[in-house]
Length: 322
Image (cartoon, rainbow, N blue to C red; front, side):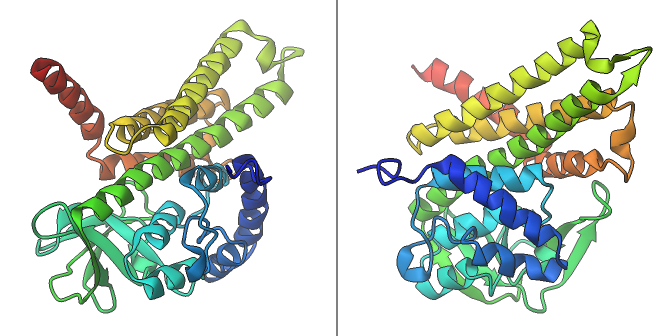
């Protein structure tokens, strides 16, 4: 019996998540984890024995999309996948109930001088990074670990680089477990970018529909309609890529493709939303710039376009080998 036959639908979790995230955003930042955990968002995919709901990843997608749309400054995608895939029950439970927070380093391996960047690492207890050798991963304790913050892309939310040479290891994941975690993380980060783009698109539609110039709303102008239609097309295509990745086998490239496509399309949509607002998106009154910085920082963590180039090279190699 499927979850939908049991009366559960992923879309409903998105609606509930939006209410919980809105509640969290109205409270101090240190209270966010508790609010999200109380709503069941952090443990949505965690095993039931660890205090989670044990739901498929498809139910976490609208939750993370809501976070991106509302510009939640919390490593929600990382927390969800770690609460699902860590090998120790006590670690999973601590993440699901919000008593501990964790992030993931995108570059570097254990033993390297510095690893990162990692979202929210300056506010996290634990960090997952790749093993020194092979395809596994290790979870380490960040207490007392030296760190440097890089504000170049986002002065409000600087990327963190960490020296973990002396950090104690809390758990290790083998290659298969790590691959499953990276697969889920790719999909949820794509969902986060998709949500950010959706919020920007909605703002652009509302602004151009109510902003009157020369006696008519901006949306009556053909050029504006063309841009809105293209933004909507890109957003729908990005969402379709996420849906396909959820159905595809984990060994396929669908999850990485969805992430690359959503990063590219989200940046376009948010930038164009700023354009249609007459540049207001760069102001504090309409903080679309926060969504753009978040997407750009994520793209930079993936290598600033390197992900799309690697996918292209993998496709060429596969065709040559066939």
